[in-house]
Image (cartoon, rainbow, N blue to C red):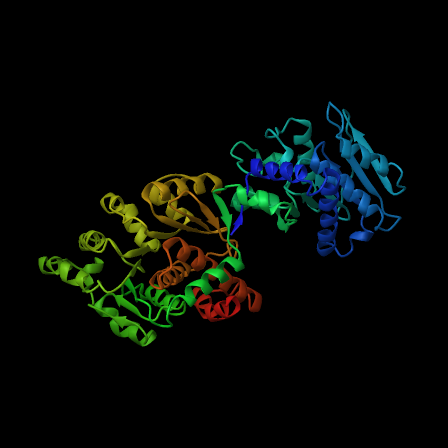
Length: 527
């Protein structure tokens, strides 16, 4: 998995890379600038005929901005001008910026303004490409609206037709934590070309409007240094999933794995159980059994003939009619039928009743060695009953939306950053796994690590997607994947299926059934 480094980690990597002689500071600046210009060509084919305005700060980012100007000056139409606003710090420019400034002063189509006090902002219109090279990761304290840079950022953002590209990170934003950052003091970029490493703040939904279209420019400065640094945050890659699937596939005889059990379904919600069942069957498990309402047996069997229905549950189990003492006395017998199954998925329309509560209590205590997966319906049961919440089996996997998480913990999360920290603490405290679906789905592990999956669609709520993902997760658990690995792989497969469908058909028509139907293609591509 790709590590997501903190600001302190990144500075450490740069420092040690320079000390080891991987490259000099000047070479690093040129490398960053060259890659930036290369990516710029991909985004604006007509960039050579456009005028540029570049805002350069006093640090490394500003030096990169000056070097970008130098490279562009050799390529663009001579009739087009590059206008640079270089903000000088009280103690003077760094050596690299001074050298680049002197070179730029000799270039005919470059107009360079050194700003140390008075500043007259330029006129910006739709033709300009504005390059934000003010701060990057050099910003030490949050900007304020009444500060000079705060007013400058407000001015840059004020032109709705602006084409703004931020170097590394939108100026005004911290690469890590932004609970004190004011939104009006952050550049709202059209593109952000992130240098070397993904920044943690780019994984939080509230920062999406600042980053715009994010592009990562990787250089692999010092892999030795990177390997020695520890972090809590990671991002999955296709290569990770490919290795995990191959490794597990080679260690198991084909189609000889333990089966999956799904518990749930109501007369008005049987579709959720069908989605979970099909999701499991399309993800490699050889046997899926279902414990559901007796009223839904025939319909489920007709829709999914591969499924096995065991020990049908009367309607009262699902809270639809009155529960009798005979039903309650049958709980131990019903649970004994579940012993052969290693992975159990709960939810799929399951509703709360006194019977359901007793059933789950017996289930958790009697089958504590089993692996449980809770979809959003099952999580709602936990949220509504503190007794069930307290006996939640360790190593369980909870799949839920951001709103469902807030209801479960009875908290109000103002930002994604805050919610992820609360989820990570909760997973660690309860020794469970959380899959928070949404913008860049986050998987929180009991050891405090957070793994982000960037595939799939976050703009559209896919009805039934929660059930589909639960089926994939429980299928992988039955194939002897660990809870953490199953959560990571399942989330990645789900996201990749979304991406493949959108690429082949349309974002607007994507449904949970489409995700299931794309899974064979996902496995074909990965393996």
